[in-house]
Length: 87
Image (cartoon, rainbow, N blue to C red; front, side):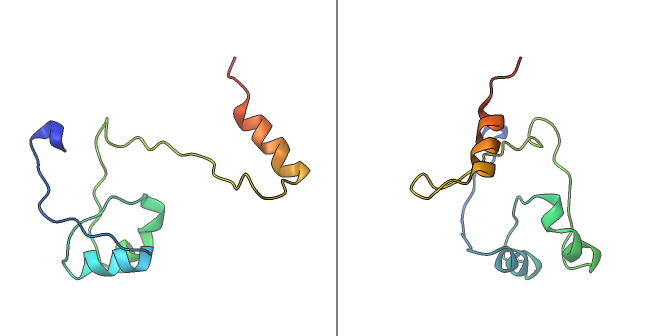
């Protein structure tokens, strides 16, 4: 948003998706969320959802796991597949 000359005034952070959606539907602000997480609230008419244009619509996702815990053979195989270099 800074690239477009838009500056934020107040930032609120919530811990759950339901709290975020309740805040938005109550008019407390706006949020950027995956579309899959807002379809029910949108279909009930509680919120309005707009799609973001390029380059803002790309979402980088990471795979997160605990290094300190036992890793099953299935999880180990998945980690190996994910970390294989692309050809």
